[in-house]
Amino acid sequence: MSGWGGGYVTDVTYLAQHYPEQSPHMLAAACVVSGVDPGFTGEAPGLHYLELGCGRGMNALVVAAGNPRWRVTAIDFTPAAIAEGRRTAAAAGLENITFIEADLAGFAETVEARALPEADFVSMHGVWSWVPVAVRAGIVRLLAAKLRAGGVVHVSYNVLPGLQGALGMQRLIRAAGGALAQRSDRQVLAGRQVVMDLVAAEALHLRTPVVTELLRHLEKAPVEYLAHEFMNATWAPCFQADVAEALADAKLELVASAKLPENFLGLMLAPAQIAVLERFDDPRLRELVKDICVDRALRHDVYVRGPQRLDRAVQDSLLRGMTLALTVLPGNFAYQIEMPAGRATLGEGFYGPAVAALAFGPRQVGELMTLPGQTGSSDNPAELVAMLVGTGQAALLPWPDAAPSGGAMRLNAVLARQVVRLDGLNRTTVAASARMGGGLVCRAVELFLLERIAEAGGGLDPGVWALELAPDLPVEDLNVLRGQLQKVVEDRLPIWRSVGAI
Ligand SMILES: C[S@@+](CC[C@H](N)C(=O)[O-])C[C@H]1O[C@@H](n2cnc3c(N)ncnc32)[C@H](O)[C@@H]1O
Image 1 (cartoon, rainbow, N blue to C red):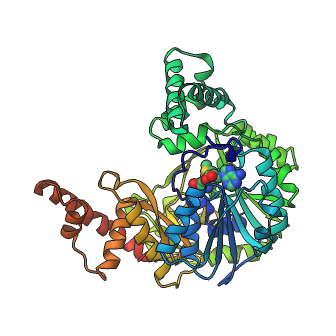
Image 2 (cartoon, protein in one colour):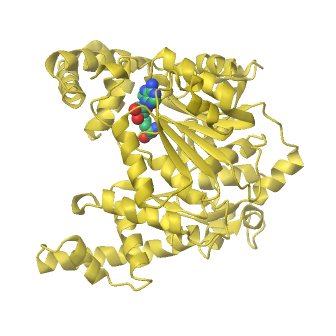
Image 3 (cartoon, rainbow, N blue to C red):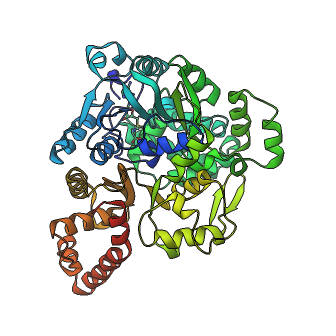
């Protein structure tokens, strides 16, 4: 680890990842679901999306490609990450994105920061609880200076008390790893091994449910992720109230969770827990009660600078006017979802016809609520949006009439060249979409096929693609691969078309 990181890992670059919660349209939907004006409707040209701690820029690139008339600024202090982001943007010909290499601890006071336009959306994923206090303070000063009145901020962070049972484990991984190896990736593997050995030796404080669950997840996690998760000197999970207190200096107020179903109290808490929460008006105390009750390691909070409450009728009409597209096969739609309060069932009498209608292409929420044969109908469009979009089974299409755009298709082609490998075809990645104004979570094989189909101008030949992917495979294996590619195209092509990825 080098000196310029202030304790943050700098000798290993983080993964290139995308999270739907960072989409500006998801953040706007979270605001509307919670009855708050996100401050833009319709075409909204010229908005400015700012990402802090953008890593290699996967999310920022997808936002830029999906919203060609917006401006995107992405900041990180790791030069290798910024260089890669710039290279990908140039290869995809994206001209509406700027990558800035800067330390957020002091960026707000620079000439470069002063020259930035006001931001409409700011997103920081995986930054707040990982960086030193001085960096958090710098972020707050930047938000105070650069977020427009009514602007929206997404901040994700490790939360207490959800992670309190893992504090000892993190400390041990970091300290033991530091004693046993040099580079952060080697350190974290060495530290993890010590933890596993102590788990096997029945160490008391490694037998908590949170450690057991984390270790299951950590066994399969890529080493870059592990290094950035555990080897930072300044990692400190936070209570929500303390984050809210810090962000209040930038006049921000918590309005929603970017995970849409989390905005429904009945899905988060049992009735007796809600009864205790209802004793309090103070939003921070209410969030503390929630965090005490639920098993949650990461929060995805949405803050607004000066939230404007939506009139009920306006909220209803904004929700009913949203256009959705299905992102799963209708037969695979899950009517049961696991939530902290228990398993929630989406009534098939109401959701079944909605899913069936979406199988024919994108539809507006208002239409999906008044379908022939629908029973048990709900008068709550917020719930429908949250259940379909928040479970990842449908996508929001803020620009439903957009034609597949050059920028999004070029970015997908560049990403395909970067991420597609025969031994990782099922890896989760993202495809940019002009209709979604963001990215469709997909498998690497889909990026490969999107690129091949676009390149072939619509011609479909899975036999040729199988050969391109794996020229050295024996004929029988090649035939299996060909069949697999054919099936992916059959299943996913209607979805790619609906969301405008092709
Ligand atoms: C855990 S990674 C998350 C990256 C990305 N947001 C994502 O979710 O994939 C945290 C990022 O914050 C950046 N970072 C840490 N300290 C920083 C600082 N003081 N100024 C700017 N960026 C910083 C790191 O370089 C790293 O890319």
